[in-house]
Image 1 (cartoon, rainbow, N blue to C red):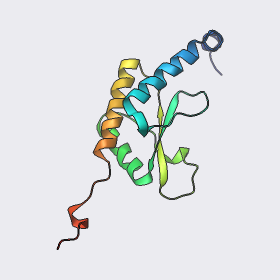
Image 2: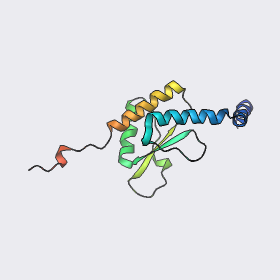
Image 3: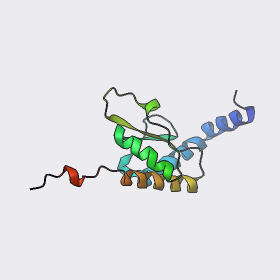
Image 4: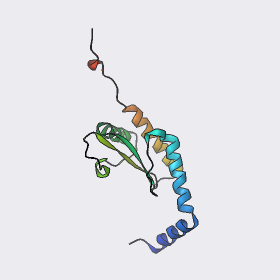
Length: 126
């Protein structure tokens, strides 16, 4: 059960627009750091979706952990039956804004570090 004081506070925030303002701020921060890498849900939520191939999602997950950011495995959020389709759901709510900004920068760096790279072994040699 939700604590009565928490329930009362959230009710007030929903009525006076504070919750919507916080959500807009968090999403705006995520958009400014992650840009086109993310998709915002069409419903009210304190998270964003980062679509990517399953292989890259696993690599980003591992890389973010080495950078001190915990990201949930993509499997619970997958709805596609296509084997390569996946992504990462990033929760924006529980951190302070400075901590969130730092974590988002680390996630972006993990995405860059794990981006598909061409191996020399895959290039035909003449």
